[in-house]
Length: 139
Image 1 (tube, rainbow, N blue to C red):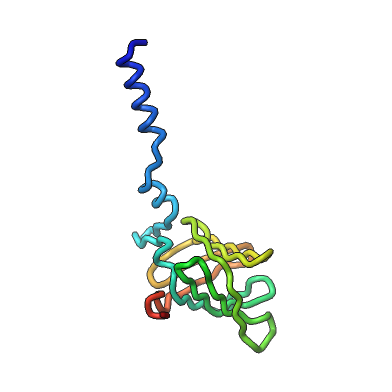
Image 2: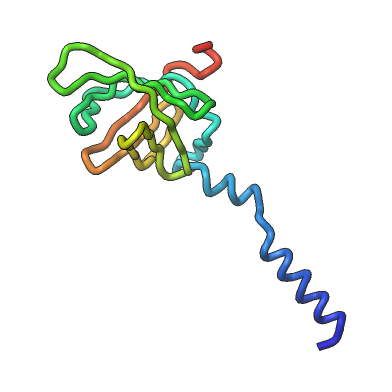
């Protein structure tokens, strides 16, 4: 193998091995069949959960997500009569939206997105959220 072939091979390996930021963004986003494109920067804001959204032993009422990666989930104990808020860390990877606090994790698969609604599912059921305010309106 001569030097020219070796350099060509090395250049080809460098190109193939490069990280492509555009491809990373594509992996970390959801695109609906209607062309709506959900990225993490569209998630911060106030989301109302269509009722009933019973997850385990609580019912989600609304989720307020912040660009800092925190989320306040307003919920009610199943059969309860008082709402309360819990703060979670949220993560979005293009297919799943996860909320974690200590040993508690709620993970939802994104099954659809058509502004202003987000369609989710987990092992317990299917849910719909509607965006009521963007993060800018909350400040």
